[in-house]
Image (tube, rainbow, N blue to C red; front, side, top):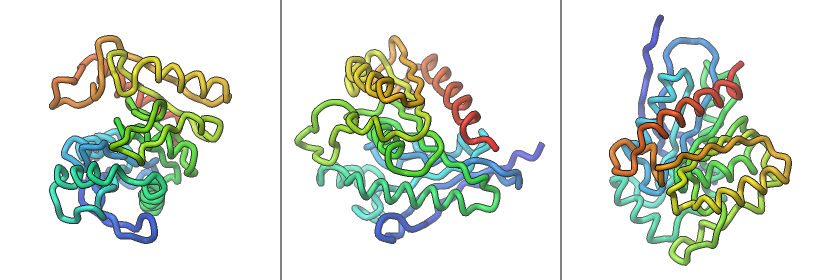
Length: 246
């Protein structure tokens, strides 16, 4: 079976037509397939996030990660760009929505797109993924330990306003993956989010892992938890296979 993939840096317009840097990967066979927008975490547009993009390509999806910090530090390292983002208190939600919309349009324009697009994010990207489930015409959202969906806005990150009150606006299936040792979000905050989605009658499935804290998917960090990560990837594969096929 032909299994070649292509991974490369691309550009496309985001909010206000601003040209964004992005990292894309896709299978090279012509079969129609769904797309996945990967939203990077607060450490930025880093090697780990690019590995996630390539993994989705090997899973059979077109995938792309927009660099949400393109405007802040063009040409800078991901560490410097992330520092610039922290210094300004984060990236405005409306800007992220427009940038992810640009990424979805990029995926749908590919010759082998089946028109379906999902979104996934970790940490701050998990929060952004939940935001997309309430704003953009996408097909599925994966929230990996998204912080500040529930809770108070930290003074150093004024852009990170709570989103749980938007549960009634969710219009796509959500998969949530959380560690029970996490403090960002805490298990109690996950309870609040799950209750809000249940009461709003929204299609969602949450899975929680004992012995796992924040960033349990991150293979290069002490926080990595192999059993939780393996199970999480299996659930992501099944979830996207259900909602992005066709």
